Image (cartoon, rainbow, N blue to C red; front, side, top):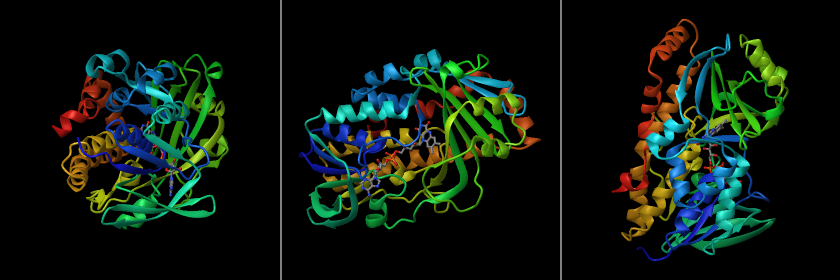
Length: 404
Ligand SMILES: Cc1cc2nc3c(=O)[nH]c(=O)nc-3n(C[C@H](O)[C@H](O)[C@H](O)COP(=O)(O)OP(=O)(O)OC[C@H]3O[C@@H](n4cnc5c(N)ncnc54)[C@H](O)[C@@H]3O)c2cc1C
C-alpha cells in the first residue's frame, strides 16, 4: 500500500465524488472542492450500466440506489415516423443473468444524493462548496491551487490534484493546455412527465429509443417509475452555441422534428419544464483524444478528460471507471508518477473506443431514407440477444481485470 496521500479533487460531479470515495477507501485524505453553492446534478435522468454499478456497489453506494432506480426490461427501438417497434434489446433479468448486476435508469438527484451521503459520512473526505479552483501550479512536492472562497483568494497544497471539474475544466486548461471543448452542433432537449400522465400505450417497464433522420429520442422511467424522463437530440439552431441550459418551448422542439408520429408529439406536450442543453465534446485530434491525462502530480478524470457525445450512454460510466482505476493505480505503492502514467495508459484506449462507438451510434440513429430502411430491416432480423452481447466488452468490465 502506498503512503497516504493528501488529495484535492476539483469538482464534485459524478466522477469527482466517486474518485473521492475510491481514493479515501485506500487510506488517502481527500478534499473535494466545488464551485457550486450546493453540490447538485445537471440534468434529469441517467442510465447506468453494470460496469458502473459494479464500482458503485464496491464503494457501498449501489444499495442506496436500488430504492430509487428503475430496472428497465429492455430497450424498445421505435421508428419516429410510425411509432412502431423495430426491435427490443433485452436488459432487465437478461442483463442480471449475464453481468451479475442490473442496468439502472436513475433520476440524477438520487445518484448524487447517494454519492454525497457516502462522502459526507466518510471521515477521510472533506467537501467544500462555493470554492472555485481558478489556478494550479506544480512544484517539487505536489501541486498548489488557488481557489476563490467567495470573493477571497486562498491557496491549498496537495500531493495529488484530481481534475474532475467537467467539460470546461480549469485544471485541463491550466496544467494541460489542451484545446477547449467544441460544440457538437446538436442540442439535447430534456423534460420529465409524471407517471400518472403517461398514456397507457407507453410501457413504463421499458426504455424507448426513437430513431429519425437527424434526430433521436430516449425515453425512460426514473425515480422508481414515478416519472418518465425524455431526452431528444436535435440539430441546434446555429453552428455556435453557448454552454448551459435554457428553458424552452416544446412547440419549438416539435417544429424541428418534422415527421415524428403525432402520438410521440402528444407525449412530448405532456413534458413539464423543457430545457435545452447544447452538447459539447472534448475535441479529438486526428481521431484520438489527447494522449495523456496526467502531468506531474495532476490528473484528469471524467468529462474533464474525455467529455463525449452521450449516444452510448457511457460518459458518466467512464468517469466512474476512471475513479476506480486511479484509486487502484495510486494504491499500488509504485510511486505517484508511475501510478499516474499507468492510469493514462490503462484508460485511454478504452475511453477512446467508447467515444468512437458513441459517434458511430449517432450516425446509425440519425440515418435518412433509404439507409434507415436497411438499418431497421437489419435490426428487425438480428436476434435481440446479439445486441446485448455486442455490449459485453463495455458491461463486463472489472477494475481488477484491466489492471491485473
Ligand atoms: C443529454 C445527455 C445524456 C447523458 N446520458 C448519460 C447516460 O445515460 N449515462 C452516462 O453514463 N452518461 C450520460 N451522460 C454523460 C454524463 O452526464 C457526464 O459524462 C457526467 O455527468 C460527467 O460527470 P463529471 O463529474 O465528469 O462532470 P460534471 O458533472 O460536469 O461535474 C463537474 C463538477 O465540477 C464543478 N466545477 C467546475 N469547474 C470548477 C472549478 N473551477 N472549481 C471547482 N469546481 C468546479 C461543477 O460545479 C460540477 O459539480 C449524458 C450527457 C448528456 C449531455
